[in-house]
Length: 106
Image (cartoon, rainbow, N blue to C red; front, side, top):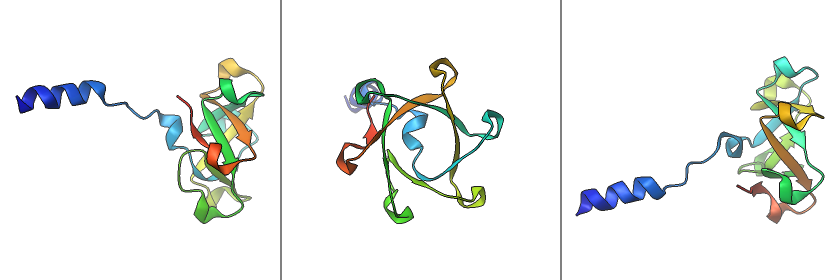
């Protein structure tokens, strides 16, 4: 019986998408080939895969959707390139003014 329950749990476990793990210190690069992720900025929160709140303190950028932009790439956990072509992006983001709205939407 416990084997059946374990198998069902594995089937229903939601796998976290890779872009949900993009949080913390972010550095914006000028060329796409230098980036870890290519990102498209949406105009609507409903169509974005990640709603991002730009933190003013690195220590508070500790969960999905919390980004702290750094000026030096050596201090960044992730490097992103913003593109204007949605079909070239790894994922899309929407920048919100409210911290409680930040996070993965899908």
